[in-house]
Every structure is written in structure tokens, then in C-alpha cells.
Length: 506
Image (tube, rainbow, N blue to C red):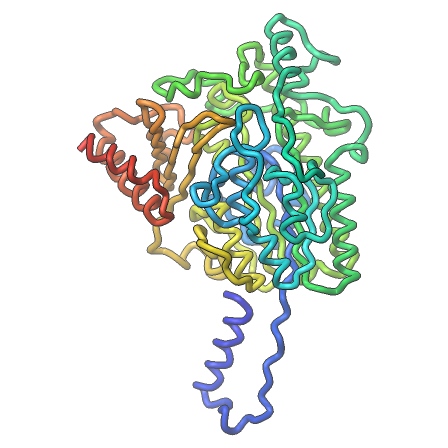
């Protein structure tokens, strides 16, 4: 509930109770509503299952402390397991079929180079309403994106040209993987396309640079004394996992527990999962120790970003803006580290890629844990409510405020599911749509002859594809119908093909 709505309801209750009337209280005045300051902490390929507050293997005291003051959305899902589309959904509040941004930009084979500039999104909306807007770090939606949308403070940004850059093509990675297949390794016996010990210290890393620029924004915002909306977007812990000491040796690879679906043979899975779309997707050379090392370095990266979060929060406290600061901590998607014998990401919907961490701190709301499915695309709708921003077009997400106030029971009768899409992957079309409920996950693969159904209660590792199993025919039909309803609600044209498919199969 917004402060504006709460104030109105309070006044209405007082009137009904006879405490005052408009006729007798001529001195009644309404104070202008203070607009909240908002800080987004976004991380790249950050899995949901690593933090100590989730029982994970990495001590994350700073993120744990934030979680203790926030609404924890423990069943949060991304929209797409790919950087550019998920970020476009986050900043616009719209699915890719509306914005046209449904693939990565400026990468090998991709047909896209930027988010359409007419899509101003939450940045433009905040700037137009008088917010001091800052953007630090990764954008991945085209050159100068935050600046042309109204951000005044833009630093540590990866593209500073208004011209489209030449596509990134991984020639060096191809040569490296060829060497690994020949039995060679990089310095220190490492595989730099998967894990690497960086020279220098934390202070020399891009993570520390983003922290410093984020701190500079917070200081500038405090000096201005105006409402601010800031984004600090980190490239960590995106693979390859590269960290300096002490993070590189913080976790003993030999002691790391491997998941039950580690290097599980893929049986009855879509053919697309068998192809290396990038050179590093060829993991045939990876030994168990390599996978353990990769996980150890990933854990080190998570420990390093916990330090980054702590430093930014401390600066907010030092500058006097913490007490009423609204904070969102989120990952754009997860990543595979050997589960199903996969690395990085591609067009599939496994939980390791689909699930994300999401913490939302509203200082006026008691902390709680929400276990209903929510989506990354719900966050911009909630930000708009927080900052009282007028709409700029269709909104595909739902405001999460009621869940933050009342928890799971706030929408007890609503459909507890999350929608996921994977239209393109670096120039290859898949058209994948998936629906996840507490019990099942159905994946529609229109570019393949094989769909997927997983019983998440019996098989949380998603190793057994039940599509085609006669015992689950009714579940498939039900999940397809629910998926079609969800696609209809967001006006996704893919629903026409899905309904045709449903009719053909009866």
C-alpha cells in the first residue's frame, strides 16, 4: 500500500469515526507526501541458492542483514535466462514481444544492438518526475542507454558511444577450449574460460570500481537533498568466475558438495541442449575437479559481492540516507555450474537458471518471507507504486506491495505460478515458454518436437522429463491450458501457436 493510499484511508476512517468533519475542521491540511529514495543492487547471473540466509555455503553477513530487514521473495523467477531480455523486462516492465528486445544485444549472431529508445522505462519515468537518477555499471541494452533516458549520474559504464559497436565474437575462447580439449591448461593449472585467479586485490576489480562509483552517487544524492533513484549494476558473478585472493582460495574445492543433478546424463531432453552455442559450452574436457574449482570460484565471487553490498550500505548510513531508503537486491538470472552437465546459460528453463534472489526493503513494512511465485517483471510495477510514477504504456507485472504487507495470504486465491520465456538465444530462435507452479514445471518448446514436464516435488533436480508419460497426460493438459491463459493475459502472440498445438493433440 502506498503512503498516499494509506493516508487517504486513515483520513476516511477518521471521518467515519466522527473524529472530525470537513465542516468543523477548517484547519485541516495535508502535508505533501515525501517521495522515497530507491536503490537497486543488481547482479549478473546470481543464483538463488548460495547465500547463508538461504542455508547456502557462502557466508554473506551483509546480504543476510539486508534480508533480515526486507521482504524475502524466496520463490522469485526471472523472465528470461539471458542478460539483455531480462534487463529489458526489469527496466520497462514489459515482455519482449512488446518491446522487441527478446535476445542479447551486440553479441555474436544477435540481430539486435539496443533497446528501442522509445522505451524510456523506469529510468525515464523517474527522471521525468524529478528524481535524481544515477546508473552505475552494466546495462547491456545498447550504448548510452541510461543517459539518453534521463540519468544524470552515469559511471563505470561499459559503452560510451552512441554508435552500435561491432559484434563481440569469441575467437580467443574458441582457441582456449581447443587447448583444453588437447589437455592443456592456463597458468596455475586453471581454465580461464571457467575459473581464474586474478592478479591484484579486491580494490583492483571492476566490482570495487562499481562500489566506488556507487558511493559517489550516494554522496552526491545526499548533498542534493532531492529524491533519488539509483542503480548499481554489477557484472559479478557472471561466468567465467574470476576473483583475486583471498576469494580465489576461500573455499576448498575438495570439500564442496556437488548437487544431485551434477553432470546428470540428459535423457529425453530437447535436442537444443546438446549444442555448444558458445565455445565454452563444450564441457567435455571438464573434470570433476574442474567443476569443483568452478563452484569454489563462484562462491568466492558471491563472498566478494557481499563485501560490495556491505560497503554501499555503510555509505548510505554514513550519508544519512539509509533509514528511509527503499532497496531492491536482485539477480537478472541464474547460471549453470555443472548441473545437467551444462555451463553458463542457453535456451532452457532449469531452476538453476530460472530462479533468482529478490530482496525488497521498504522501511515502513515489517520484514517477512514470501513463498509464492513472483517475477522479476513484478519489480518495476512495485517501484512505480513506491515512487508514484505515472504509467508509460502497458504494465505486464503486478505490484508486490500487498504481499510485502500481508505475506502469502494477501492473494491466497490467485494463481501461484511464474511465467518464463526464451524467444531467441544469440540469433537462434527457440520460442520457449514455461510455466512453473509449486508442484510442476511445463516447458513448451515450439522449435523442438519434445516438450518438458517436471514433477518438482518428486524430482527437484529436474532430471526426469515426464512429457509423454501417460500417467501425466492430464497434468500436461492442465499446465498447457494455464500457460495459454497467462500468454493471453499479456497479449503474447505465441499463444496462437500454442492453442493450435493444443487443438492438434486434442
